[in-house]
Image (cartoon, rainbow, N blue to C red; front, top):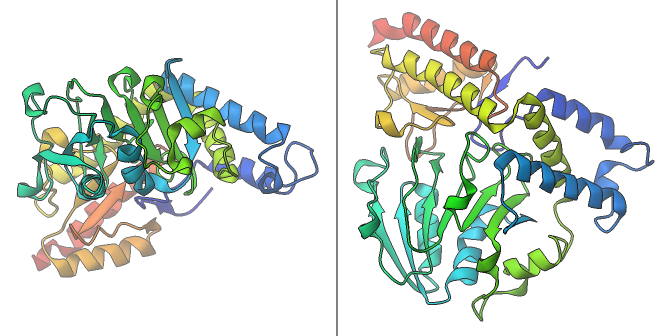
Length: 361
C-alpha cells in the first residue's frame, strides 16, 4: 500500500491495482516477450488493446453507435483549436466562460470566426455557473462550447443547456465521474490525465454527422474525419497512455461502472464539504449548488496559515494540496482513483490543523 495520497489536479493518482498491472506488463506484455511500451501500433497486439479500450469506454459511457471515439494527442489545449477548425463551417459559435480553461478555449476560437462569449461567471471570480436559458444563444451558430467542470475554481454544471446548435463540451476534469447522457452533446473531449490515465492521451467523442464537413483550413492531422477513417492510427498514437486507459476502464467496470463511481464521488465530496461547512476556520467561496465533486478549493484565515497548511500536509503524506495561483489557498482534487480513506485522512489532518492553529486567528 502507498503511504501518500496524491491530491494533484493532474496528472492525478491512478488506482494501485492498475499500477501493479502496468508494472507486471512493463517488461513482458502477456508473454509476447516485449515490453508494453515497445509494441508496434500497427501490430495485432496493440490493435486489440486499442479496440478493447474503445469498447470498454463505449459501455461505461453508453456511447451510441452514431458517435466516433478517437484516441488523440495534444491535450485539451489542442482541441481548443481543433474544434473550431473542424466545426466552424458557417463561421459562428457561442462560448460560455466559467473558468480559466473555458476562457482559453474561447480566446483560441476567436482566431477563426465570429465567436461570442454569451455568458460568464468572471464577475465573481468564476465561483458559480451562470444560468443559460435557450434564448441566450444566437441563431445560426455552428456549435455552443462549455466546460463541464472547472479544475481551478471548483465549479461544475449540474445540468447542461438545451441548444439548437451542437453542444461541445470540454470534460477533461470530470469525465467518467458521474453518469452523463452522451446524446446531449455533439462533441466531448477530455485530456486523460485526471480520471483516465497518464498525460499524453486525449479522448474525443464526436457525433458522426459532424465530421462529414470540415473547414478548408483545417490541417490534415487535426481533422476528425482523418482520425476516424484511420481509427486513430493516422500517425503513431500515444500507445502507452491508451494501454493504461484500457486498464483504468477495466478497473472502473469491475468497480461497478460509472453509476457506482458517481455514488462514491458524491460521498467523498460530501464528507469534505461537510468538514468545510462546519468550520469557521476554513472557507470555500464556491456557490453551494455549483460545487465540483472533483476539485475542492478552500482557504484558512490567512496566507501564512495556507502556506503552513501546505507544508505540514505534505509532511503528513497529503501531496499537492497547494491551490492554483489564480485562487490561492488549497485545492483537493479527489478524482475517481482517490479512495475514501484518502479523503478521510485529509479531513482528520484539517481538523487537527484547525485545533492547533485557531488560537492564532
